[in-house]
Image 1 (tube, rainbow, N blue to C red):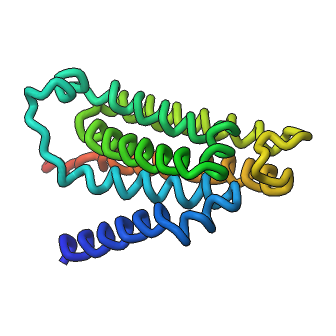
Image 2 (tube, rainbow, N blue to C red):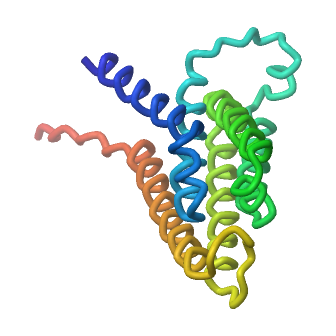
Length: 198
């Protein structure tokens, strides 16, 4: 039952990612800064990360040897996502189809890398990745919402400010959710003490 549900969810996310990568939906999503940053890019990334579970790479491949502990792959993923938070990248994707294609390919690659690397990484690597992503996203959000000038030529200042506020809010929610999940996994109930007989 759970396996069937997981397959249905995965198929739905993958279908949404494909739709958001192609016109007309992709054209609509990149029209607004909010939907490009908080809908299109995350959906494509999460779909690629989820589908990475179906990829089986031999442990002796050069990439797997380089990424043995998962940290390099997670760092690569973070760098790619950080780039697509910058004004020049968002403007390029909104104005040029080649930039948009490059965004989709790079985000898919980052998602696959993150998915594989997450399974290889330790708790320390996971904490570093999540902490780094939250810090970068909050920083970008604060920059966008506090700037008195338009940083992206393709988007209005109001869109920029709303997107900045949403980035901060979503980052905080995801960080708290992840910490609660980790705490729930690590906390174990104390064993019950049997009653001592007199």
